[in-house]
Amino acid sequence: MSRCLLAVPVLLMVHLVLAAEPKHVLVVHATNRLSGTSMTFESGMREVFAANPAQRVEIFSEFLDEPRFSGEWYEHAVITYLHDKYADRPLDAVVVGGDVVLEFLLRHHDQLFPRVPVLHVGVTPLALQSMSPLPPDVVGVPMVWDFAGTVRLALKWHPRATHLVIVTGASAQDDWKPVINPQIAPILGQVQAEYLVGLPPPVLQKRLRELGSDSVVLTMGFHRDREGRFYLLGDAIDLIVAASSAPVYSATDVAQGRGVVGGRMLSYEGTGRQYGEILERLFRGQPDWKRMPDSNPSSLQVDWRQVKRWGIDPELIPPDAIVSFRPPTLWQAYRNAVVGAVTVLLLLSGLIVSLLLERRRRRSAEIAVREQHTALAHVSRLAVAGELTAAIAHEINQPLGAAQMNADTAELILQGGGDRRDDLLRLVGGIRNDTLRAAEVIKRLRTLLARHEARRQPLDLNAVLTDVEVFLRPELKRRNMALALRPAATPARILGDETQIQQVLINLIMNAMDASADAPADRRTISVQVEFAAGTYSISVKDRGSGIKDGDLSKLFDSFFSTKRTGMGLGLSIARTIVEAHGGTIQAEKAPGGGAIFHVHLPAQDAPGSVV
Image (cartoon, rainbow, N blue to C red; front, side, top):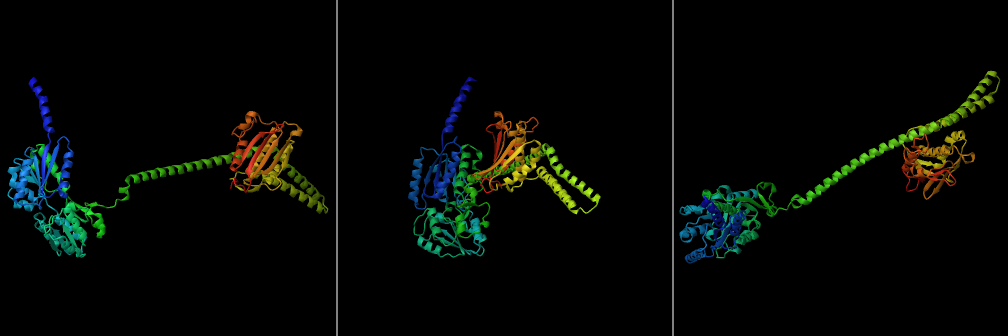
């Protein structure tokens, strides 16, 4: 048992050491290292290996540089080079790209890489059919380019096309006709196909410039022309696109972004990822690693710039197309900014709504407060009327009594007979004057006591003060007091509610009468003066009564504060509310020599502070 326990750590260490050993993969490409397809393919493989750091994989790249180099001497040199280079670096897998490389490897497999699994890529089904049956350890996915799908797309987007021009090169690798023809023949219909094979650049460019609006071009690029000049695929495609007066299509993603409209393109990077996953299964020892996918990955690629250039209807682009170089929408380009702006707008909208609701609540509250103030002012006027009941009754009884006496006298004259028409006319006139006098008292009382909404209109403070004096005259007489009025020298015009201003003055004068109730006879005169200064009219109500205590001066205008035993404490509070609603101020102070002075300041009618 102890030996077994000791063996466990040793086995774990051996496993970790073995797992740490990297796997070696050799990729042999047909063309040179500047070819876009070779590097794109390897990039896809490296992406898969990088995602699994537990298994390190080293990739070695070799290039046969076809078709620039060929022949027996070159093949012999390559065999020697590869054999010697990797003699001390055992390989775990070999990936060969293209028909030429696969044929080369099959000829020298036992000499170069015996017992090493081989994956072929980029070999067409037609080429595989022409070869002898592959050994069991040589597998791969036959590469099929979707020429039929690409041509069908081009003819749909250019319905006036009757001429399909296919541009190829002069090398064996450029011989696409046996692969393309079987795919496109069933779909051409009335469209004529023409192959431009290996033409030198000046000739090829001239032919392409002469194409009309009834033509479309299909190309995979090329490696060599008839005169023996060699090209990279990307450079060849650039040459074709620059010269063509017709739209160009391709089935290889090497052409994407080079001015080609698009096509059903085979993805070399996606194929690299596909082979990377196959190799990972091999390295993990999975017995099904030889189960190959049905096809290499491909997709419909479209260049938006060419769509606009050739006037293709965007509605014809299938929804599965990958559209490149399309200007991003506002949402795509400024998503975060749009989200931020929308969020800010929503927050601002919410804030505005809440402020409007708050404004509505405040307005409702203000209306309620104003209604309460109106009700309180009405109650205050009723209270004043209650205090003036005796004087008002006396004021009304006097003219009514005089009218009664005149009526009795007239009745006696009528009973006595005789022609005393003049005396009767005099008595009837007296009755009429007395009833008008009583009616005027009742009218003033009704105006004061009526409940109404405040109305701002021009009025003269001098006239208001005169009406207040007439209204309070009976009470002043009953209390044996006097009211000394000093109106302004000219009409004192303000904008205000006459009844409310009357209520303020009546309240202040009644308070002055209450404060002077116990004063000697020579101190029972109340002075009211109207003055104008700096756009403001000031009304001063002064008495020589009991005065104001030091601690009460700051509380006089507070609600429910009163210095009277039976007072409600609302009169001065309501007076302040009325004055402030008219844009004015009210204040109190001790009068020199005893008593109190109340000052009411109201803006003149044309002053900036006047309330409309």
